[in-house]
Length: 598
Image (cartoon, rainbow, N blue to C red; front, side, top):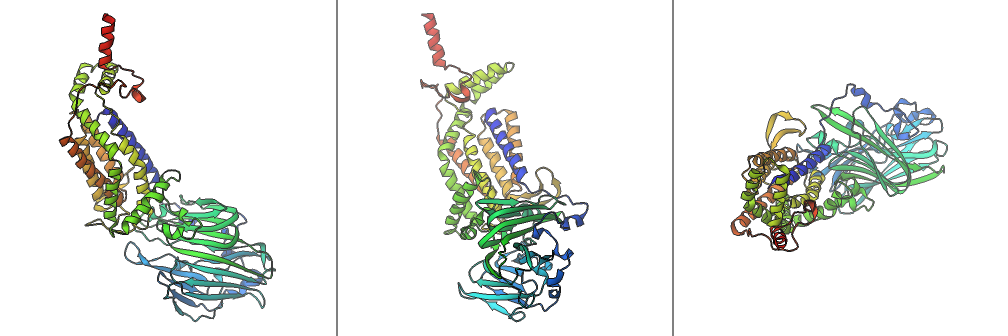
């Protein structure tokens, strides 16, 4: 690989480095005043933005803050759920098919905050009411256990908030086996003299519990979303001490929040006319961090004696197929890279291909290896051209070295003579960069996919590689390398770097010591970049490099190089970068001399 090819590799590496730095989770700085991040200030007329606990309950609801709390257990094939009569809230939602990083069942609801899914509204006497503070009545027994065994089997739980003799709020939960979602109905009876502003909100206040070992990276992927009309809106609470909030108006299909692998979404099954999203970041021990998001659907209140609205609540994995099955764009919450380039590759090519291969191959590590082979085959025409060009570059290396010695004091003349040799022998020094350039969108798509797809979460391969979605650490360092964020050594990243170094050596076209130094620096740089990437991505790149080494060895051993000057009258490489030099071939120069002599 000559100087120009190395320059191309360096530019590609810089693009990778900047892109990876931009997308890497940051180690958070602890805020000076933790209490500031835990307060909600009333900044507008959005109901969910206010703190009802700071208000008196007014003339309608004071008597409802005392009562008997009952808890009902619901169990399906997918989850175990606890519903509390205090607030008629989802107090616990434990997924049966997923484990946390340390082996416990994934539980997504903030139990210590009393649960979630409340109704919030403003009253005609100017108070903001959140039903999470009140005791509902239910016919269910305390700790009644509702077990759904058959697929499609349904069970209902009904809670009633008796405000007075005629005014009531009813919340009904309808659970169905075989789904990660349940239906919720809200009925308002004789509330026209109590609810003001012709609106109430269905609110999920406290986000999702953490489930992964690295809270910084998990929170990096956390967001809140709303589908308003045909537009997907989202917010990201990326700073301590600042509450990010957005209010939206218009037909709203759903609001949702998620971390790296799990999500909660409130889906309107009739008409919601707006949404409210709010997020805040809080510090955790050991430089950890958690992003919490409040999501709310704004529901029109018609001011009639009776109103009933229907909702679906999704609490489950951030699984592309499951989310897409709802047909309302919930899958947009999955971060799969740039929408106009990277996401289509990940969404419509890589993910379907991985899932297809996984139908026959249970181990995702093997799936990645087979995928690497397929990509290698696909790029073979390009890499074959590259490797043949490398062989020619190696063959003309002595000529180039002589020119370097001859014109070492005249760089301009040296460039002209080098380009003349390239054109004369039909060598394209830039052909080595094209396969890597064409791979970059695939690498970016794989990077995005491997970091967020729940299929690879905790999917092991062999030996020390226990999770293809995170780095495969073999050594933890006692120090931290800034910029690159390195605090451990990844085994696959190290193997990838070794194979890359071997490739650089095999592709070497000269004994120039500077080129060897540059190649070594490039290898180290790539190792530092890839060291923090998912082990699945490094497995792909390592496999691809091994295949490229084998291919290059075959080319070097069995391909003969013809060093005769090109007789092609079309003169290869007349266009592009060679055009500005406009250097004639040796045969043309000879012809001109003969014509002059005549």
